[in-house]
Length: 113
Image (cartoon, rainbow, N blue to C red; front, top):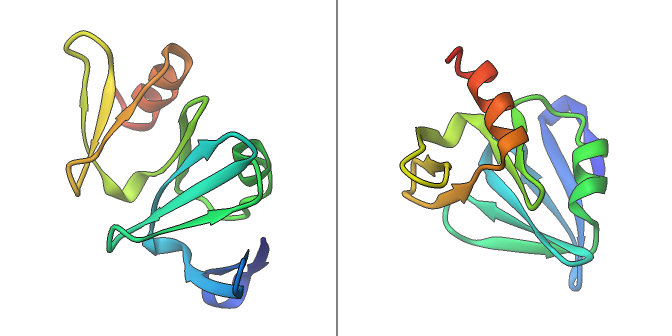
């Protein structure tokens, strides 16, 4: 993954070569063992061979929050925080993302709750 600051895009290595993705189009990133699944606005996704920890440490873009050990979410797509039972984030596309206890603290600070 390479940061291209001038255009707010990220270059991702794929099996077919490379793909430039606008960071604003990434809704969330989900850990899949030693891979990461980038879920994009149009419900398409890219599977890349980088861990979520690597992405979290090397993403040079603001606006993403680690809400769970397996998820990194773009805050512009958070619609609501639901804590009936287990806490989860509801995204604008109605996907539900789990929130851990430590992630809840971060989310509450972020949302001024």
